[in-house]
Structure formats: structure tokens, C-alpha cells
Length: 302
Image 1: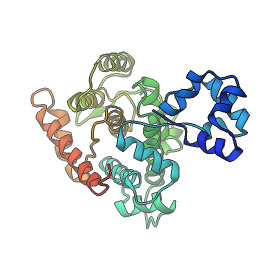
Image 2: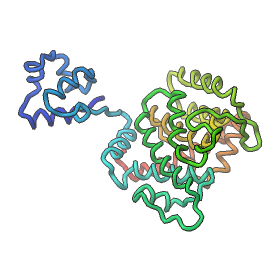
Image 3: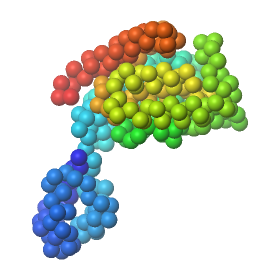
Image 4: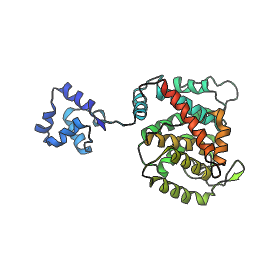
């Protein structure tokens, strides 16, 4: 759905009526009727209307989602609202996801960075911990902006590029920021996909996933597990994988999940045991979904 509140407000401000769009611009009545129905107008029409009203086209129309949570996240992000669901999701997911991967920042420090763009770091806090916290905030913004888009390799690589840019890793000639890994890596003592296998495995995984007619929570968890086993990047796979899971939950109007740092042992066990007992990982992710549900309960309108 598309909201034309800005267009209607600009019509009122300039003393015009919707009928003027027909008489002055030559738009068909069917095209003008799309405004009331919340249907998309073409870019050409929007530019024509924008020129007529003397306002940027972007200010006249915005896309709205049927997903109440996603729309709330977009609204609060755009308005810079403090203390809402967008604010809390940013802080809690960023803290837990980064801390699972070894970040030394506390939740209070993470919150301080988000809220004030400053941090009382104390002694010995790695600069990369601070950078990757800020970058994770931006990566969540990217997820919110692209939540309803198809899941592609380019989108996944973009998340990795956002997360790892300007870090110490990015200065290493063999560390491919925003690209698939160039060196073999292990997880939990187990070898992951070799560099020459990654592109093919990722293409196959995404093709199979995008063919699904209806995506359920289990499908997202299964994709997440397969992604982590491929481990396509040199580093940052866990955080990117969990960001992708957030995106897909928002895309399919499924309550997202946050794996809390205190539950990481269960999460890692679930990834390792998926083939023999998928319930381990599913239960851990469902527990993470309950974490988000409790958060949503504080924002009853959602």
C-alpha cells in the first residue's frame, strides 16, 4: 500500500484539488483514483505531480507495509523516535549478536552508543568493538529498508560490507569485505565450505529458498543453519546470518527472534545438531522469538 498524505497536504497547501490533476496535468480519472486507493503511481506521473505542486516527489508518497511491526520500525526510524520498538530492537539485537561473537561492550555501553553516539569505554576496549556496534545499527537499518525485497547474494554481501567496513579486518589484503572468503575457515573445529565452493553453494541455497511459495518460521531457521554451515565470509558470518533471519521474518510477517548471549551455548548446539535433531535449534530460536514477543507486549499497539 502507498500513502499519499504528503501529496494531499501539498494540494491543500497550494490551494489545489485532486480534480486539478486531471484538468491541469491531463491525468486520467483512473490514475487519480489510485491516490485514494493507495495504489502505486508511476515514477513519471509522480515527477509530473511533483513539478506541478513544487515539492520533491519523495515527500508526496511513501510505501506502507501490511506488517504492523515492519511499518512501526520504518516510521520510528524515519522520525528518529526514541524509546520505541525500533530503539529497543536496535540496542538488544546489536548487543546480544555482537557479544556472542566476542564484543567486550556491555548492553549499557551499546545503548549509550545508540542513544548519544558516545561511549564511556573504560580501559582496553577494542576500537573494532565500537565500530562494529555502530555498523550493526546501520545494518539493521538496511534490513528494515530492504525487508520486503527478495533475498539475494548482493543483499547478503551488502550486509557484510556494512558490518565490516573500516575495521582492522578491512585493512588485510586477503580479507574480502563484502565478498566471499578467500581462505578456509573452521567453526567449532569443523571445516566449512571451501572458498571455491561458496559461490555455488550460496547460489543453490538461495535458489531453493526463493522457490518456496510460503515461508514459515522453520524455513527461516533452516536457511540460517545452512548459511552458517557454508560460512561464506571470512568473519562476521554469525551476525550477518542473524541479520538475514531478521530480514526474512520481517519480510514474511513472522515475529523475529533475538538469540540472547546467555543462550548462545544452546544456539551453537542447535546449529551443530541440526541434522540429527532440528528441535534443538528450533527451540532456541522459538525462545528468541518469545524474547521479542515480550518486547512487543510493551508496545501493545503492535
